[in-house]
Length: 363
Ligand code: NAD
Image (tube, rainbow, N blue to C red; front, top):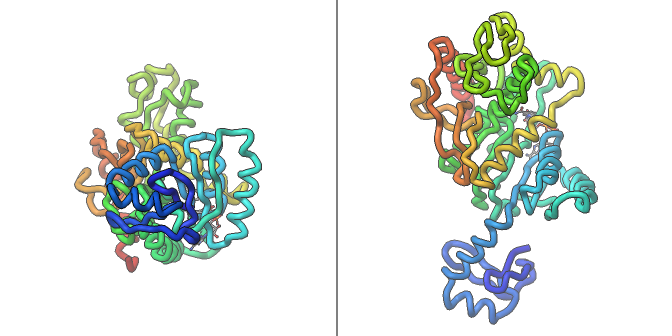
């Protein structure tokens, strides 16, 4: 279904007998009259359509698995998107989830939720890509990345062909890099959820240790979302007070041993959860919705998303996470935080680990 740019009515593009091509786009009309009006001033009407589209916040989620469906649910609960589309190669699965979600609509803010296909990426503000293969027993990380690279090489051109605003990838870093290369999008419009979740885990564990609200803990996990990620202890603070061995903020000790334990829990969180329930879904979905919100509301929020890095602590041409300002343009700015010598060395090692894998892929 499309919108008549003149009168704003829904038009079924398969049934409409009135269409026009202008400014590189196809338009459909409900009547000959609307088509004639459009042709008298296409710029005026397409600009009005764009304005209406910005009120209609559309998010497409590709992948109706554990993560994709929980993102849809969290989006629906947040009320931030007015249109949510779920796409999966298994259309029964996406249909079933969409029926279930729609049945809850009388309890939340209004939204249009439907199961769709790649053509629904047209006019989307954000397409969240969560489709991917899960690691099988005995499969190496490289095998898995190769498999997911093939999935992305299949999916991303189908999405990019409809020119949605921002691509937000959930398998991250290497797959964010693959999405960037395959889509030919500018770097600001391709974002991985990166270490947004790891940072949230870090803040949660520190908040429990220090007994303060996680919102008031300022601390980042940067680098790869995975084994080589780096906690930035040197900049961690509460109310501007750095976390030291004798912590001036919470007056509890934060020894090297305690720090190692906290970071160990952050790094191993996914393994621990998967051991118990088989997958992770809730916190990652909330992390994705946080990024989506920052884009849709043009918030300029600082989040540790994954994106293409250029000359940051001598790191270039790899996607990894650093504190980044996110707004309606996607990536607005990478923030140059002060890292101590050990942290910068670890960040460079994390970049090298990712580049080592990228070098073995055919992109
Ligand atoms: P899942 O197996 O539950 O779901 C994957 C979905 O993708 C399935 O419904 C499948 O049908 C669909 N799919 C696969 N290939 C497709 C294709 N070519 N086109 C359309 N749909 C396709 O997996 P999940 O638990 O939802 O995880 C999804 C991805 O997110 C995985 O790559 C996983 O590693 C990653 N993940 C990341 C985090 C994080 O912290 N960043 C957390 C959990 C999962």
